[in-house]
Length: 216
Image 1 (cartoon, helix red, strand yellow):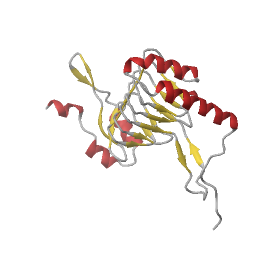
Image 2 (spheres, one colour):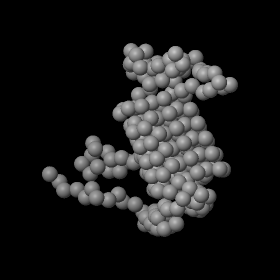
Image 3 (cartoon, rainbow, N blue to C red):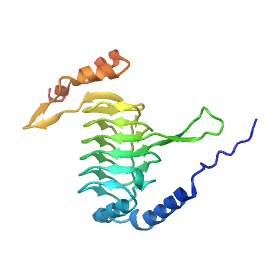
Image 4 (cartoon, rainbow, N blue to C red):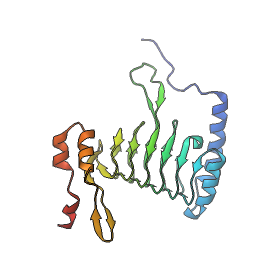
């Protein structure tokens, strides 16, 4: 069998220097400190090319591979220990929350080739989304507006809007309801959209709960 060097990806020198400079600055100045240092961390991210909206919270211990591949909307919270492994762009919509130690992973290896070359696909997270603690998002994942990914879930593909997902692999378990004036509301078309987007209609009728069940 042919012996292949699979230890490194062939980056240009300019890219290597930019990444090295970022890692030195972030590990020295941005990785530590209490939450009230968030504005300073945001300033560092912007200085290295990240697009960060207003009133965002970036906590200590957050790892960001390439800030120039990061776009964050307004009022976004990224909690302690989140890992944004963004060889490809990661976009996070406004009013979304990424909880502790969640991993947004855009990179993987092509196992179909002997040298396991590094490949990557972007991750898109819509507005009003919650990625709960220690959840894992595969390369190419799109989490649509209002969706929730449960703690330690493993998500891939397109996750429907206003839907709660959990498990490994992450599956829809119920529609997310929003309280308006103390009353639960829901979009009656969500069930039809869920049914059309999943491969198993039987699973949806068995597992997607009625939002009013909790009140009974």
